[in-house]
Image 1 (spheres, rainbow, N blue to C red):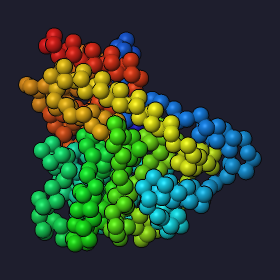
Image 2 (image 1 turned 45 degrees about the vertical axis):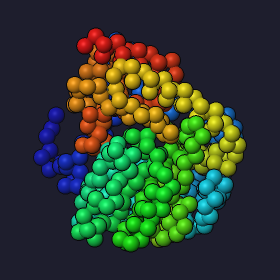
Image 3 (image 1 turned 120 degrees about the vertical axis):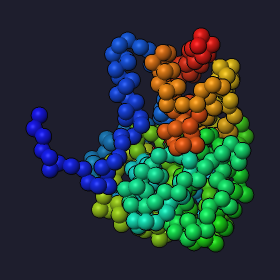
Image 4 (image 1 turned 180 degrees about the horizontal axis):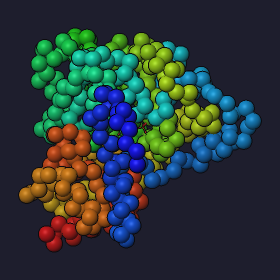
Amino acid sequence: MTINSFIKPADRIASFKPYYFATLAKKISKLQENGLDIIKIDMGSPDLPPEKFIIDQLTASAALPNKHGYTPMGGTPEFRKAIAYYYEKRFGVKLDPNSETVGLIGSKEGLFNMTQVLVNPGDYVIVPDPGYPVYSASTKIAGGKIYSIPLLKKNGFLPDLSSIPQDILQQTKVFWINYPNNPTGAIAPFSFFEEIVAFAKENQIIIAHDAPYVDVCFDDYIAPSLLQVEGAKEVAVEFNSLSKAYNMAGWRLGMAVGNANIIGYIHTYKSQMDSSQFAPVIDAGITAITGDQTWLKARNAIYQNRRDIVVSGLKEAGFEVDTPPAAIYIWARLPEGYEDSMSFCNDLLEATGVSTTPGVVYGQYGEGYLRVSLGTKTERIQEAMDRIKHWIKAK
Ligand SMILES: Cc1ncc(COP(=O)(O)O)c(C=O)c1O
């Protein structure tokens, strides 16, 4: 191999590590080659497909001759109208499709790019800990500074707004929140949304609400949108996604809605960055968000059953677990005597083939926890719980 010493990464990515799940996938492949039967309850990728009428729309559109060229950047006008329709119908929130919506290639892309369009080097970004890693990764790339705010069980996994020092607030540009929450499964009462919108106005900061789990709710819970708060659009943008809501994670369809200035910056940035999506995917997305929604109830019931299996399985194994009202994760405190989540999950994987996510991947306040995803067949989840129970008991 020739070593070209001039080939070096840019400073902004020099200290970057691969995304945790990319590294895990390599490890899992090796274990599988050695014959271990792996049960993946790590990543939040739904195992179930979207409803048939959505797939039918994809194939019908793909069969048309005029659906193979470039599509408008930031989503077709029809997709953006459909986003506005969905927001009005689901949340009673009125949006102007032209100025207050943008289509995304999955919401992860939008989360990352929003930071790029707003954050200058030296600006603070408040990120929840534990939290989805993209909030911090995108801040680092933009040269921003991270202020991690702990999400503690004693506060219902909500950030304590009064704990943020005044001098940090003065330098803060963006504050990330995410409810229903990954990884904790916590939900936010509407009063918290009202509180944070008022806080943002008072301190002149932008609230970015990452909300891909609003349509995965259990029992009688219905998750609200941050934009339901009066005047939220003055300071907030919300990200939503078809990945979990409609079992369409691989399709890469998402949206950002809210403050027209921010949405405008994202449109401009994206017009230089990407060339949107395949028209049949967008057409099927329109069908998903404007069509029959009743199938989501049956889908959520499947997750709810899995949730109950995991909660009782982990409790029996000695974990401390709350029953989440939404999202597709169980956030479990390791049994007594265990603290290091990375080695716990590694040992568990190697000994039993059950792959979970160590809590520390989501930040220092995730240490001592592990996360189980519900996006795997019910029998395999049951099998995973049995393996975990036996392993812990035999230790
Ligand atoms: C909190 C959170 N935000 C955003 C995403 C990204 O979703 P997507 O890019 O598939 O829309 C995920 C995916 O797991 C997530 O958990």
